[in-house]
Length: 135
Image 1 (tube, rainbow, N blue to C red):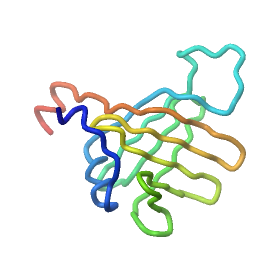
Image 2: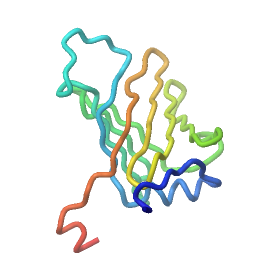
Image 3: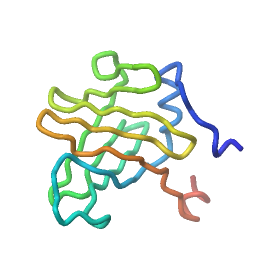
């Protein structure tokens, strides 16, 4: 039952941070770049990981030169909560919105000053046997 529980609201940034800790989220989505030859294999790919030392790392895996956004602090300057969404402003050009759907799924919408690089659902990547064994 816990697996299917809907996370409608986080009360604090700390709860959202705990939700992200130790997980790597990956997913395919859509972007505002029109592609007449769109297939699931060339859909935008994103990786999101929260590391206690490095902070939040967001990587665009689909590009030839992957775009990387990172954040080491959880301050009011870079984070804002809007109802059940968390808004992250890593720089002046980008805004990223997060909404936890359940324990292992997260909706993400990434707006840039010129386009929307990604919008879609990220899934927590399952850990391999050795990663589970050694933590």
